[in-house]
Length: 286
Image (cartoon, rainbow, N blue to C red; front, side):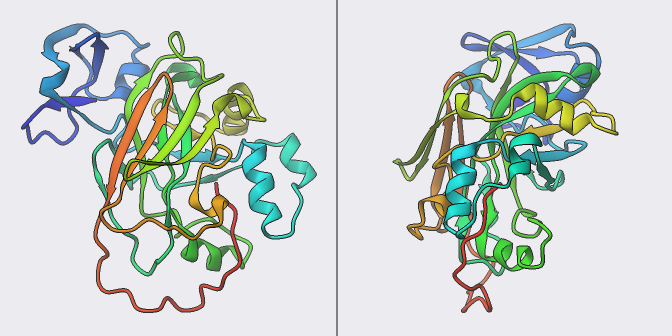
């Protein structure tokens, strides 16, 4: 999705990137483009430098975030003195995130109220196209308020409010004929400093298995988002160094073959005194 630079359009137009140009497609949204079978008449052309790339799917029908990287699962659970459950190897598990809190490339991410432990999560997401199949892949940042997440997961449900405030996607959706989701180097940087590096090929559960699990007993719709989960080393919690994100930080998630998703952390909503009852126990990332 894109809009001419300087335009106040919110949704923008679907477009096909062709070298240094963007070709406008005759569809209202990416969902409607996929529903139409991934074909549409072409309209105006724009120089890539003259457009802004927007969130590919502004309000997805659903967002399911999976948990598919063994290194990440092992590290997160080991910090709690736990082993990986046997069921994790059999079932691609996921949680539902908030489809109404989706942000695009270059967007400012609101700092969550009541949190002092803001984290990024380095992921790839599949976007469902026509007939419940994967229409393309994009970069995903599953922003996490770890202290909020820690409290709610003590009850045995969640994550919920620790994830409810923001998920960012972009900068583009690349179709499976150009990127099949099987391998790519994944890198996270904060203010230009590399903080995470992993390989998409390390996913324990395949995209086919993820799609099949998401579709069990339900219907996948065009625009549904399926996150891979965090790649090994792909979040601050996994590092254990307590270097949480701060207002003004620039977070860049780069996936080879897709591009770089950049977002800036916004200001705190107000002066945040001591957050009550956060504790010090680690939690697991999504």
